[in-house]
Image (tube, rainbow, N blue to C red):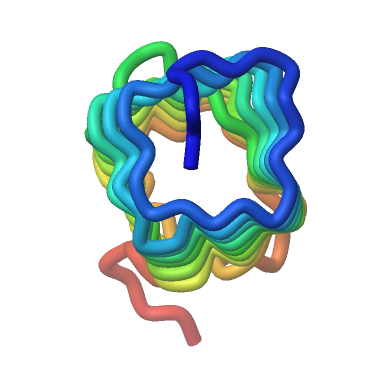
Length: 188
């Protein structure tokens, strides 16, 4: 499907691919592409945008995502943990449910108007990350740096302040009341 291993300022529309191996994409746009159940191995995406794409259940191995945007895309069941640095992604109006983010540097990342259900953030640096109008139902946060992270407009989060550094993080009521359920107290 891909004839070379280097693409710059290309636009890919309605592409369907199962395997991407050692391909470098710089400033490319992917529209309505289907990479579901694909293997993306040793690829580099720099300043790329994915619009209306499906990467559900894709396997990411040793790939980099630097200054990448996902808009209106479906990324269910993706593990980002085996990605290489640099890692800088922003999600806008995406479904990133059942995703795994483990030991990643996610500082200043944006999650906007997205469904992030049943996902896991473990040992990540989410300092100054923004969760704007996101549904975080059943998502776990374990041993993360959440300093100055913004959850003000998000809902359904359950973040244990004993397991995460939440110094200067922003929360709003009534969602912040979820902290009380984690304390060894009885509320009447």
